[in-house]
Image (cartoon, rainbow, N blue to C red; front, side):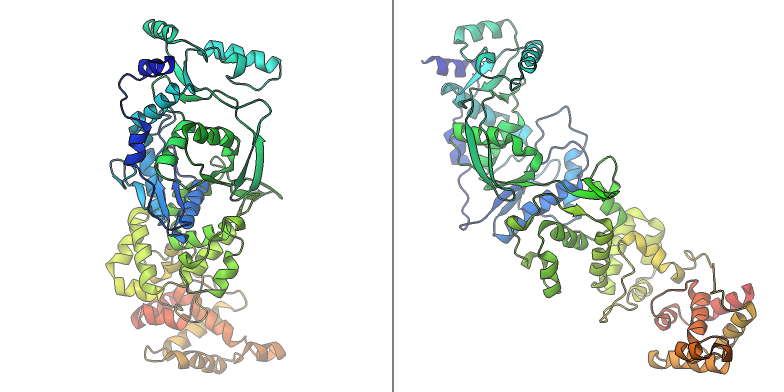
Length: 550
């Protein structure tokens, strides 16, 4: 038995599976040429960040556009940073916005797909089998350095202004014998398993990033840790093994990982794996005081994906906005394809921003308003109700008490050529519909100050006489105009402007008084439709109430 094989047997006495066994268990996927297989692979260390949602969305979009596969892998090897229910929070964040996976982790206890387990803590034996193989080939070794030894080495390297890390002369256990290792293990010494890096000082690597373009970097010379003291893998090694065995074609992730590419490409090479393609996404930026900064978990509530669910942004609107961030030509495409599904858009990595897309909450709200304006009343009712069930019990109770009435409210000025765009998110709905429910309306009426109380009262008393529920939409405003003229108001603003001394005001003033009396607002959707929904009795009650308060 060679020394390398003896070392491998010493370190991994219980590992009998070979890399080829896993190659057979996880065969190449039977997909069409050009199909993208990619993953969203977060660590369960906290809430899902908007940048994470964006990366997951890009992965899903890229896979969908090529009839490929998008899967969710949970990278939970760093147990110190893991938070309780971290995986569930990530899964919920994706589900809330319709980012569906083809394979992977479905819940804390469920997975789907034949390339699992998709949770790294359940794959320890797989990683150990590949590390054992590297040890047998002389490409990995046990390292018994203590933290103090490593710290001292770092101090020396800093003083000499050398690359920090374990390599070359600092890799004191590279040539350890089996006997030496056996002795140290028997003494209870802890160890990690390091890569015996084949990298050379001054060596360079080149790779093409799908977003950034051609990148050239120093090749890796560090003996990076493959397995930690507890036998679990580091991110670097698990990434290489998993992406190979799960037959990933493209790794889409934040550009903070570009510095790790030399390590990852080297790991693919020493393990005999085919390289994946990388697409590194620049961080989402935010404009502040004339300059740009990264969207911050600490400073910006909109950085957490939970914010959008709590505020009630519909997933369709989130998708529209994510696509505007993803590809610079999406807005032009949408303008020419107003009724098309977002899935019909031809996504391209080359159209992604190299510098980082700019997050604009005002623009996002505009996009969301536009999206909601395209939905029919039944959809708005259903989606608002779903949101209110978990976020606004009072609103939920009112809406669910009378579905027909609530739906008729949402139908006002909806479905026409220029639908109103008052709602950006479901949390806006309570305020938007408040005057339809006495439980929500505060009965506060603030009239324009160009008319006296007596003039306002005169208008309301007269309108109370002429208002009828039977009048149709085409004749409603002419009837108001006729009443206005009778009371001494101009029949049109232009008439009043020409000769203001001849009139008390114009028909717009008269309609405005009626609007405030009935709704408490100076700006609303079509007043005729509002009164039709409220019903004759309620309109008369409000007119009487308004007259009484004057």
